[in-house]
Amino acid sequence: MLFNSYVFIFVYLPIVLMGFFALGKRSRFMGGLWLFAASLFFYGWWDPRSVGLLLASMLFNYGIGVGIVKLHEQRATQRAYWLLSVGVIADLTLLGYFKYAEFFITNINVALGVDAHVAAIALPLGISFFTFTQIAFLVDAYRGKVQETSLVHYGLFITYFPHLIAGPVIHHKEMMPQFAQGQTYSLRWP
Image 1 (spheres, rainbow, N blue to C red):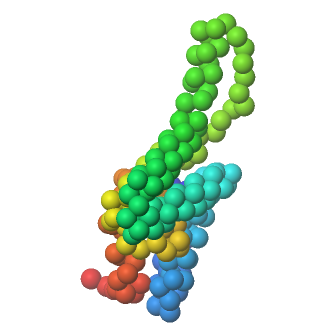
Image 2: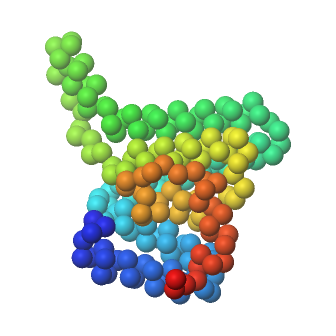
Image 3: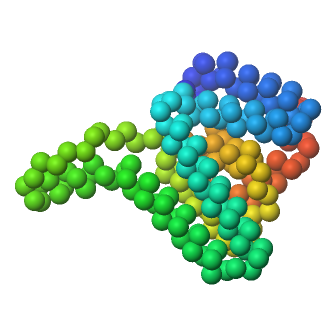
């Protein structure tokens, strides 16, 4: 679904906005959950198989980030650093696998004269953006800049449809305060 397609402009976006403001007026949690679910739907529109990878990556990084926040609160800086390292290495390994595995196998085959095969790897849409956004979250957590750890808001922070597939990489501290503001959940005319 492209941002300039009729289905986005006349179906998806109006439904998402109406649902968000209707639910958000009653409950900020439900408004955020609706927008998170709508963002997952938007992402899955391209390739539903990639939603599982996105969710697994998101849950992994959320767990690492919350762990870093707790260690930071306990002033266990060395353990927080190691947890940050594990998260960043795992993220970069996942990204490297999807972006470069076929390239390396092909070059090894040519260099060594072998014929090793790897199953075709479909590159998930936006993997670089959501991976680097999550790395930025882990770094912010390590630096003590993460104040809110709601799973729904974190999920929305990672999957928010206007930036998920095209960026830019955003920081947790830039987006999270917007979810705390009541005016975010109410429709206002200029």
